[in-house]
Image (cartoon, rainbow, N blue to C red; front, side, top):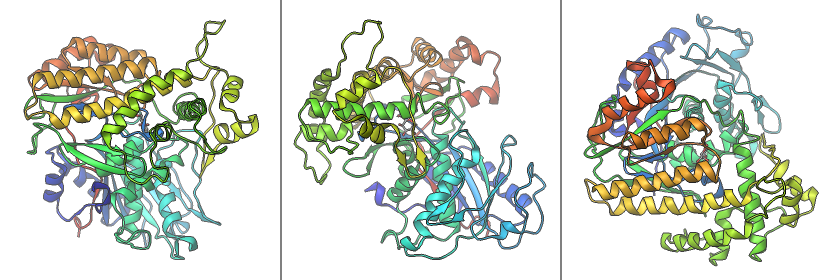
Length: 570
Ligand code: GLA
């Protein structure tokens, strides 16, 4: 299985690029990063970790939005844009960085076990130094109230420290002091998973620099892709967003030219599905380029910055709570027993309805899962609230608590003041939308399986009807995200409409939504004119040219997942 493979470590760039399946000029970026590392830290990096961003639709198919944390399978792919972290253990620091925009702890303290000097090639992110504290477990001060670039570096580090450097983990060893330098081509807040890519790259960098990639104390095979995903998922929660695992899985497990069917229940598993007709030879991703032979997907940034953390209370984390409460209420109305403090998910409720082995043995056959989803799409009507006198939709907190059958105290403890690791996930709403959210989840999970099926049976090159079928599923997904899940925004709605008017087979938002990017399925021959039409029609793109334009709207292809490079500079 793809999740059980080790993390690829390449010893020369040719192998790396061949495996990434891309000709994007990574060499320049890797070289710049390494040279800059030498300038700033007076020695060569020992390791460069790479983690790509993620897009949840590709060449011929789409995936599921906001269903990973309900434990339904989704269908993402990694994109070519990535985060790179160069790092090296520090022994003696010879001189302060000439680029320091802020003075950290004194240089001596930086020799302390586990201390980190983190710099970012992007001028807007200042240098940070931090030293983890060892108490019962390792502690790192992560600010969950505001967006700070180094929080994602710390989040990756946190897991490495607590998995590998505690007596409970069978180790009293000391983490090495580390210098690291980050660069990224995944636009922040764009819905392309820059946060997951940062956390994956950081986890990988700290594992590598501490010599833990081959460590067999946690798993007999050393660090596998699946283990890295699980660690990165746990780590990202420390930033304060209760996210699912799709981004991390895409970032770590993807293979070039394939989408990844990721399932989270009863355990993480991933199956790369080759895209019909996708070329395995390298292509350029300049705006005029394309996937061979018939269609490409084009990401367009709405330029509405949407960070999951900033509005987590009323958006992302609220959706997580709404789907969980929906699962409990649905179970109750279907007479399915659920433990008082159990956070049952919608996927688990489906399993119980379908008589799935409660021990969570084998993955459910996908045909049976599709029947189960069809059934749940009708059962979800049980959640429909009565019309309100004030014309509003949904249920109040009091009504929701009553529907759950729990006492107020237990409800608050389980769903509203839930502390998970380092993260506390408070939410806020006047009316909670259990029915609409659950309906989106079941229909979206079914669309994922339909996309997967169409993709598997498509000929290569895919026929026009296949592209149209997939485009329709993408459009339906957008409709559901916009109306039922309410995670779109006017700019995204406008962009997808413009994309369809400009000839896309289908177009939808990707990522958490509320801003960020759309992804559109476009005929290969139309990419250039498509980008031109969008540039002229979408207000925020007016006046953008060349590289600036390419930054916001670009064709891309599925790339491979996280990897590391050890010996480049030896
Ligand atoms: C974010 C999260 C993912 C997923 C998507 C929505 O990107 O990190 O886990 O929930 O939103 O599909």
